[in-house]
Length: 168
Image (tube, rainbow, N blue to C red; front, side, top):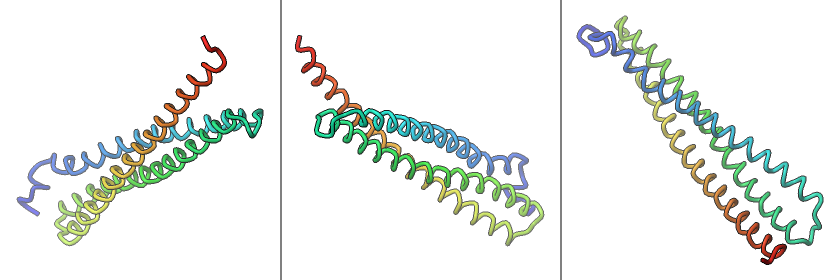
């Protein structure tokens, strides 16, 4: 395609690949953080479960630990959903970058139909990836709210429980 934006500048292909590549990197960092959060929820669940085994089922401590387990379960499910969606976005961003390179090569060799197909596929995978990234982040915000709720309940329980043990 003589005179087209893809062949006028040697940086045109790089420009088409950079955005998906940067978003691929951002998604992978987000996946790593989400996976770490999920691991922390698993660790905390194991601690609470082991604490429950030594408590009397009718006790206030037992009921409180059960409540914590319920919130940890909600968090785990949110994190799992977010992680699945974020990994799908990561793959879609990588696919978008690859399709951009292929489309650029097709444009260079004047394969107009192939270029147009690659452009549509690249655009569609990019839109899917961005949508997934946004939705995954929304799930992470919801999980953070549940985590903060759990922390607030735990702090309140600690304050009231400590007062009943040490009424000074």
